[in-house]
Image 1 (tube, rainbow, N blue to C red):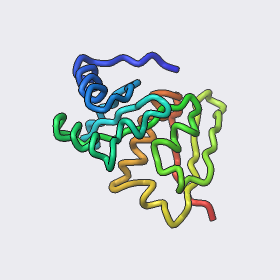
Image 2 (cartoon, one colour):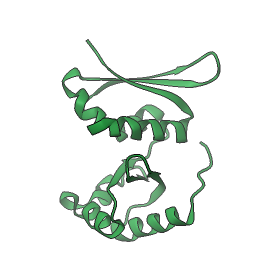
Image 3 (cartoon, rainbow, N blue to C red):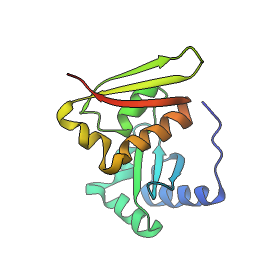
Length: 147
């Protein structure tokens, strides 16, 4: 796993998130393009991070004044990608090592749920690309439907 370097701003955001939710944060990704913050929480702490009916997330968003998304950590790339998207809509995740040494990932989703998986303007697809590149050095992520 690559070393995670955090800015003082990110450390401050992580501190706020941890104090308000009680969940342990591994990383904070500032997505400038999507104008949101993506927090990576330890395995099994998703419920703690979200809170009852999403109350914790809503409180954090009010304090930070930015949309917040939470993804549960996993050492397994395909599991982590499932956590970042809707696991119920994903049929299969394939990881391929290319000849040039780079890695590629193909996520096969239910055709009826592809729009929901991609997200408005492809924001969920972008989130997956950020996570795949940062933690697993996966350069190419494709989201396709199975026939």
